[in-house]
Length: 126
Length: 502
Image (cartoon, rainbow over all chains, first blue to last red):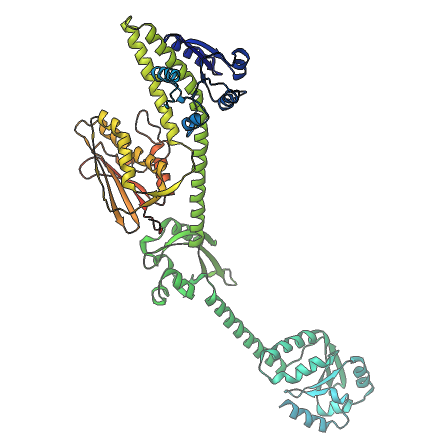
């Protein structure tokens, strides 16, 4: 079983590292350094879970999630952020995300959360 | 009395010159009051009324340009009131310009008229008496003024070897708490005994020895030991030979001013602290973000490698595990730092401090058991509610517990951490965190709550300083003491909620 993962993060090293890690779990991983880049490349109906950074130039994580949601897509979104915002996890769920992970993320936590999206269960971890 | 004389005189002078304007004063001098000195001069020179002056052997005095008012004032001279003196003074001033003395000398048959001369004899005496009275009044007013002033004023006799205080005003007694008997005749410098600020006294002595005035602010003690701040100024009184005869001391109570200044200083300090913490929080936040990115990458790489080499390369596996551990340690430091400097609006609610402590202990439990320690909580179940920010207070308790745990870490025999609550008094709830650790070295006691003070290798030196700010913001105090046996106790108070909504 191989599923798609998209990572949007403006930090190139973070993208590469997460990709390297998730590939060891046999995910198909594609990375994007901006939300615009992602929207330009990936079709709306192409299946796959999105790992989304919050603090980014251009469209930030919240805006990106909103755009995905209003476009009618049911793509599962997991926020991954270095920013420790109060209630960020709550807010993430409220805006329709699957979860919120604080950087640096533990591999197993991340993979569990990604796998849960397949079952369409919201899991909150922080 | 005067009117009587005038009437006699007017009888004698049957056709007196300028009849209505002639007056005789107490010494028998005739006074000619006229607006026109020249007319009189001419008349006298022509011989008109000359005999009368010659016969009576009078010397005359003419007042030139004296107006009715002044004449009126003149007539009222006998009254001993202030008005009279005022009018007199006026007339004196006027007279300096307007009086003329007419002297008729029988022997030489000469008429002498001099302008600008003041009246003589009795007039002068009377003036002298007035001056004396004036001087007396001046002394009276000045004495009253010195007695009325808020400043403590004292006078020292500089000619006597022991420099005794010869006068002190009521404010001085009030200010110092000493009585007249305890002050008069005593040397100022001995007045306060050895509790006095010796350095300031030396400065005063040096200034006075060099014949200079002194000015300085210093802390004094009242007779009852109460401290007060005063601005002391000592000036020199010299006689005409320039010898210093007296010292005049002027003591202003500046305690209130000083207190206000101190309060302002404290507020400024607090503001600075807030700004510093705020700035630091901002700085830490952006720093944390920047560091978290590479930490994320490092952790992910290491975990990826760990998986790639699973079951192989045991040495590499070990190294990867170390990288992962250290990465997580660094992340933990950032997390703690963020937690400490968390910028959130305080939300005040009614709290049961016992529940808050229990929750915090539960939160800390994994930590406590991991370190092989035991935590005991002795709570006073009847404690009233307090008001405060739950998160902030939890932060304080968390900080105190983790400090205590660390203090006990090095000591294998130290196991027990005791937290207790009780009602300190009707207004304050007391929380104590007592450890059996290494205690606080005496030299660190004062610095303990300062910013960036730490004796832990990986400490930030922010925990206690922030905790104290939080407790103080809640209206309580946070202090530390060493236990009599071993270890230290950190304790803080919080005000009991006095609202009706308990």
